[in-house]
Image (cartoon, rainbow, N blue to C red; front, side, top):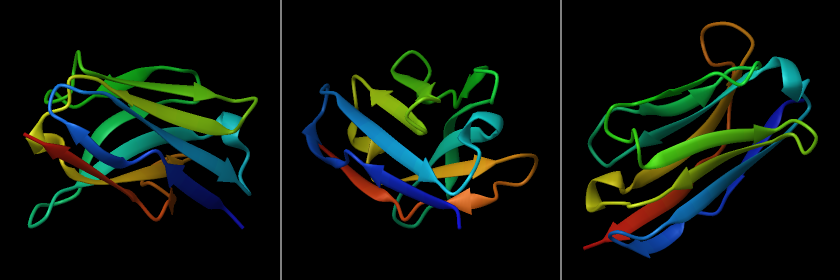
Amino acid sequence: QAQLVESGGGLVQAGGSLRLSCAASGITFSNHDMGWHRQAPGKQRELVADITSRGITNYADSVKGRFTISRDNAKNTVYLQMNGVQPEDTAVYFCAARRWIPWDYWGQGTQVTVSS
């Protein structure tokens, strides 16, 4: 059974950094695209960044130049390095995996709160 477990969320001051991790199990990690999504209160869930099984990355315009997604296939883990965070980055961040479209598996989410 597929399982995605996020960690690394917390409270951080504006301008600070945070690194999220997502450990996957129950899937062949190396042949799945991985993504980070977020959902702020009262807003729809949105894609923040994704990385294909081949390592091609894609970012939302709002995080380009500040966030970096990466993966370690040996550890079955995907990361989201968040630099220069802003209050508008406050949200629950979800890890997701897919072979094709749509996203097949989701984690339970980790809260990121940015104080001004």
